[in-house]
Length: 199
Image (cartoon, rainbow, N blue to C red; front, side, top):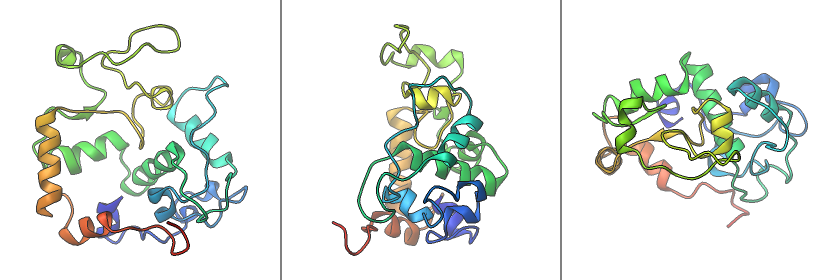
């Protein structure tokens, strides 16, 4: 998102509907990209997992039908839906799937050779099993987040596998303020962004 903002392709204060028109219903018309990124959208914590659904497109459709549980901008409420929608914005603006975008514009430029969504089978011996899923099957090499799993393993809020060494490359790039985004964008990322009336 910050790369796209830096390139002038989006603005953080733009309403989400500018890029995803079908998002603009049920009280979400004025939600901004900034509110998604800072968890001030008013959307609930996650999509409904009590009903059977599968696929990224279904997740996007369900998010578009959501109604905020708090007025946008009124309170901090951590929501996976926020980052699911940010992932869709990246896909719509870039014309690439989120995993392709991340590989081309973040992982590869930083030489993060052991980082990706959907890790290949030959990485399994270096991946720790995480937990049992709802069918009592041990997850190993598959994202543990149930919403991201239903989305096919690629989502804005979860799904990336990495190593400590690769994460350190990313962290160093953020400290250096170069390679994938500028120092000015990083400064914006670490500056409090919540609304003036919130704390």
